[in-house]
Amino acid sequence: MRNQESIRQALAAFSTVDVSDASLKLLETLGYTSEKRLDLPSDPEQFVTLVDSETIISKSNLLLDSWCAAHFLFQLTNDEIPGLARQQLS
Image 1 (tube, rainbow, N blue to C red):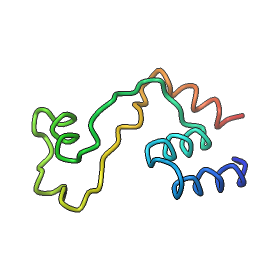
Image 2 (image 1 turned 120 degrees about the horizontal axis):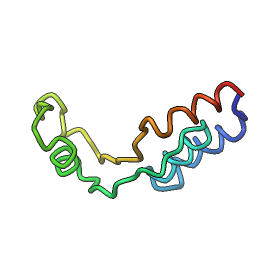
Image 3 (image 1 turned 90 degrees about the vertical axis):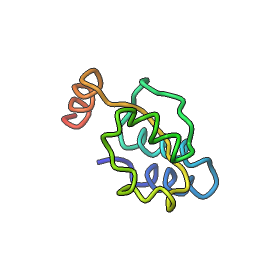
Image 4 (image 1 turned 30 degrees about the vertical axis):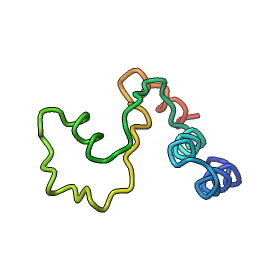
């Protein structure tokens, strides 16, 4: 089980730290990390346009007007998944 105090501190950071930094810290605390990161714009419209370059997602279904920001934290691939599984077994 993850240290509850570490999780509590990571959650509390959301009120004082940039949301993407706080999110990364929380995920790290929970055992999820990846070096596969992209520096994408946080503007929701730009973010969706870059991530969904082939217009697979219907933008009308996303309700982009209600989004404050979008952050691409990291990508989990087959490279990271075996390590995550080992962490959960130990």
